[in-house]
Image (cartoon, rainbow, N blue to C red; front, side):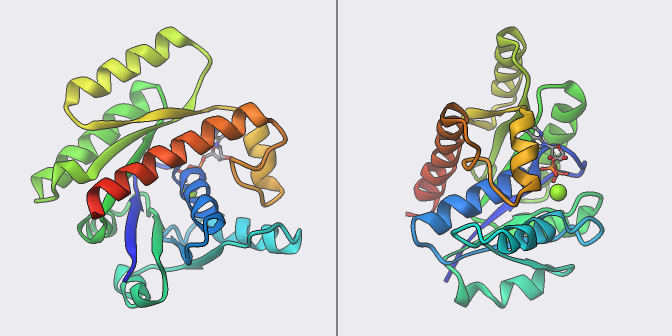
Length: 213
Ligand SMILES: Nc1ncnc2c1ncn2[C@@H]1O[C@H](COP(=O)(O)OP(=O)(O)O)[C@@H](O)[C@H]1O
Ligand SMILES: [Mg+2]
């Protein structure tokens, strides 16, 4: 039986696909049988990324499949150790269904209020619909280089009472270039960036461990 992780937002561009690919590559690397369920059929970004990865023969290869219905993912639970949903923006129903079935719900957010407030509203909606709030975590992605702004965002999220995972993914052109080549966030040539993203992935893994053991 697999662990299910939903990387969700109702809005595009917050870094869901980046985070899903980061988590997937790190889990594949430690030997887990891993699937990214790409629920964003209109964009297929993770599916196309995986094709580029295979074309470039980048190892380890990461299994990505496209789905429109959550039920079609759930039947694959027996085949994988972990399934990471790369969420469907703009679909409240699919987002809720992913959340209901996930052991952990990761809400990536940038540092602007335009990213943060919709994610906080989504967290509230999920909890109001019966999701356990301890399963809902925020993850800082696409963070600029202002420490003042970073500290403000951390305070802002902490005030909501939801868990904010340790670490953050900075906004870097190097990440976009890596993705273009079929690489993941821990596969740029900059060791400082790799360390930052490895520690973000570790925060997620620690949370998964805490919730599932
Ligand atoms: N940390 C980052 N640094 C630089 N570019 C990023 C970063 N995270 C995401 N992007 C870019 O921003 C866009 C949206 O990211 P993506 O992960 O596709 O978001 P979502 O899946 O939530 O729509 C993509 O073009 C992606 O390459
Ligand atoms: Mg996406």
